[in-house]
Length: 120
Image (cartoon, rainbow, N blue to C red):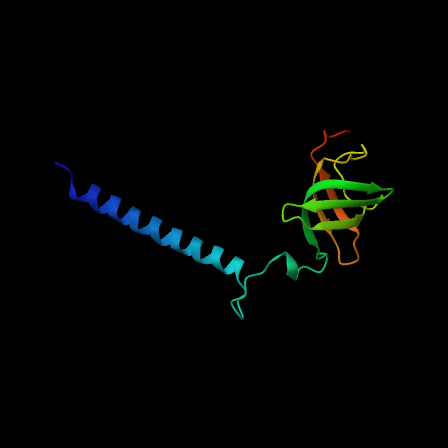
């Protein structure tokens, strides 16, 4: 038969473990929300974050550094892609390739990622 000391030991260890996990969960919750107003902090709250529209679609026209991308909704978005734009490849994209881009309010592409192979 199991001794009382072992049962009490297992129960007290279980209690302490549960107490410790609840403290960790509470601390994690406080990291996600402000102590003062309960607001959830996102990347929009960071000073260096540049807002922009995410564009996902197919390249339908290329005119120098300007690209026209047709989204699934049928809307066409014109954007300027230059040396400051984040890209995965140095290869020039072609009409028909799929794109995931982030475009600022002025129409400049902050990032321009295609489904073309990555070149190093």
